[in-house]
Image (cartoon, rainbow, N blue to C red; front, side, top):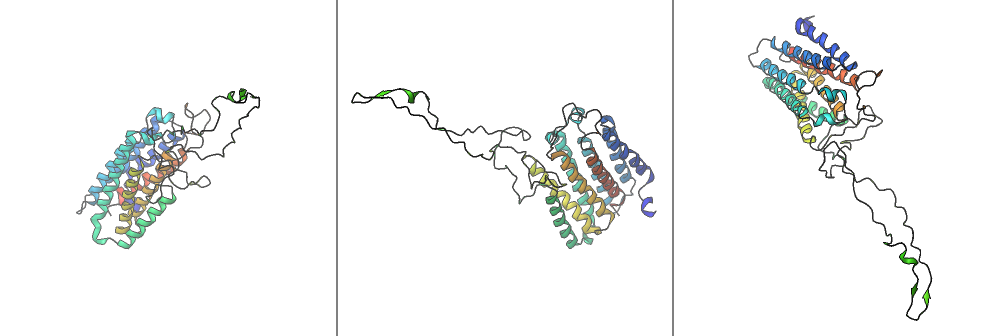
Length: 331
């Protein structure tokens, strides 16, 4: 009851109403509801943070500023109505709004780091280091890009869109006579004897199948996982440095949370929930779809917008984690 009382009933009630409405809107492929209820749920955790009295060390002020960046990021990641109705695998990451949203969430995590480091004298550096390494390993297992693994097809160059695979135009030369009838013409030797022999050109032997040399950045950026729960990600080369930087920032944020308050604290739980929700966003945005949605959008009788269940799980973790950090992050 003491923990529940610190969550503030009014913002918590808004979140309790907006989050299920958001998931139901996504399940029904109702675009206005998905946009409106997402912003309403984001407003709930910012509202809750404003209710926290400012602390002497400005921890709560930094958390409020971080949550404001999160609200901006949520707004930027709302797809356009056209993209919502006709999603194409991987194309969401090409949007400038998506990149702006990533920048906003980077500032969100950076603000949390500054807020948590206000408790730097209480930092347990062993816990920090163990958490940091564990988060990097978890990201690797989840298919996120890591510096020590080169992406498949990364050595190939491409001047086209990072989402459009290119096809190699190399053609294997075969020894075929330029004039197939040239060998059938009779020839006369110097002695006057006509040579009527026919020279039949040999048929070229079929070459063994060669591996594709197409320069396609859509190849998986990490180990394939077709038989695993973890999807295969197709991260374009121009986005990989940005995502690596994002991973470094969020990993530092989680490690700072556990190092300053311990592994079982509300601060650590909220940070971990946020990190897992970001992994789900990456899966939803960059995963290789086996059967992409048709251009007409969700078909009649289909069960909601494609991927709405996974997004729903991610939203529960994200909004829950943000709200927990808004309510208990400064404690």
